[in-house]
Image (cartoon, rainbow, N blue to C red; front, side, top):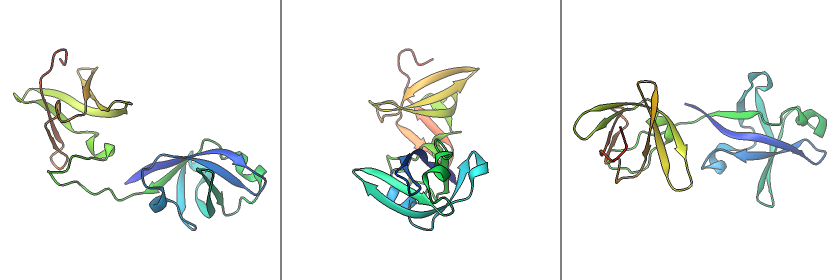
Length: 166
């Protein structure tokens, strides 16, 4: 599956390094010298990592063929896209990659279909499912109390009825 793993930030120094805003929970696995990324917009692809280093907590990358500041300044805000294997969790797992939840059908415990998950909001307090129903959005806190059953293989999520849900 292709996922956005970072956004390129500002140029750093004069040797073609850029800051990276991470969008992955495992940067050590996603970024290494020689790794090739697709990009959004596509016209900058492919980008191959020439060097990588941590500078005071900020990840700095340089790319082959872009050896100076002028060559990397046009990359600001470009998204780096990687092919990532996302394992399907077992039914007993309580953690799910957000992309596995998109497209799941959502039902109440009584079997009433509420709609389909179209997005996941990552809020400070908890993740929230955005369920589309009849052109409207229903927001469901993605916590065990409200979402007792998730089956990503069957693309089915069961939610507990709560005041104001429907």
